[in-house]
Length: 242
Image (cartoon, one colour):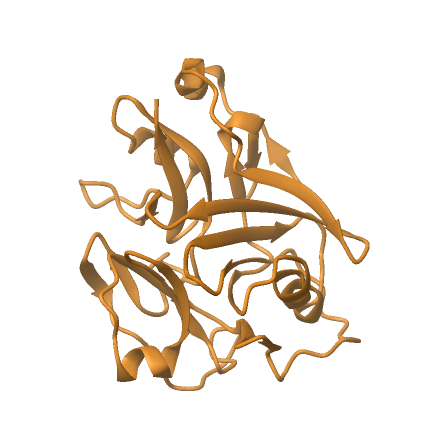
């Protein structure tokens, strides 16, 4: 995976006392992944536009959105988006719904039903989209994407173990008690089946959601990691205070 190093100016926040790194590299079934962990109650945020309405899009502009004393632990793509970078499905940021949920089948990975919603509230959850639409929970932040990777402990029925569709992929899975979320990205191209098994078999998540594919990017300032790529649409990340 191509990465770049942030300019020194963007690492002023790292002068604060060190905190535990939420991200780790691991190998699963002979492929490399990076997994970042967050807990219910952590400062998980979604970003799309800055206060003036301009697309944030890049790691550098994302760091500009932080208040004094705040640091970014990690960030990555938060779901699929149109060419104008606006979200394809449900998008709730700070309690405001900016795009409604989409429950119809359609082309591409997003429309490969079942897809789902990652909801951030008092607990964390990945919920199948039609179940979400039938009984919407109160999410402070939420993003819809697809397909689901793991549904009630089972892999998505359309995933094939011998598929030749290989891509960099990122996604999120949640523990059964809703207290922990794992955000993962493959550091090399993998199949949907392989990526889904990472969440089910290695991380033990009963539900997991695909966020994006070949354009996926991970930013970890403490590791000087900022994957190269086009400007992102919705971004999800963990913020800590110095």
